[in-house]
Structure formats: structure tokens, C-alpha cells
Length: 52
Image (tube, rainbow, N blue to C red; front, side, top):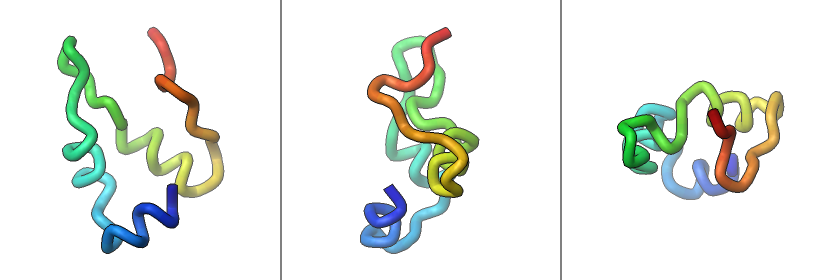
């Protein structure tokens, strides 16, 4: 994921969040906090993300 971000010119977490869009109920598909944790190595991305 870090490589993809670098390849795309290091967009901000807010920009990546905007690009990912929102779910049908208005939540961000890619929360900045989750993305930041993955990029720091504190979390591993999952297919579909967390479910509430």
C-alpha cells in the first residue's frame, strides 16, 4: 500500500479517503485512521474492512 501511495505522488490521507468514496450509508470506505495504521505497520488491511 505504501508503494502504491508513493507511486501516485504521496497524496494525503484525506485525499485517499476522498478518492475511495463512501458507503451507501455515508461512511468513508477508507477511514484515514485505518489507512494511517496500515501505512505505519500497526494494522493489516483486510478484504472488506471491519464490520459493525
